[in-house]
Image (cartoon, rainbow, N blue to C red; front, side, top):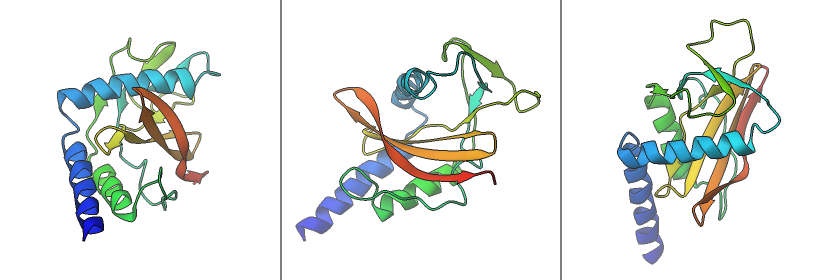
Length: 163
């Protein structure tokens, strides 16, 4: 019985954080997360060329998600994550100064290779984050964890190469 209550509580917190992803806290967390991503994931890229908006369209669909256990996602959380990614295809525009050492392009209309970044999807009251990117026909989805106010990468939870 206690286990069922704990699972229900966890899902309630997850749903609350997912469905409130356009509020002020979400925007603040996105900004912090994007700063982290630029300083950790793309350190070897001098100038990051990416779209001028974040969007989940086509970045989470069609791939199985892995990673369970203490730091991974439960099957219910994976379902919630995929539902949110599939249903939230709105654009979150990035100010020019948000990503340092970058060139933001309006859309994929340039001949240069462009990074396409998803909107971060936060779970467990902003303690976990699923983030996806597409570059050169390869999609990767990573799970990140926030501890003591700092983000760290946990592991790859999905991806498709050269589809």
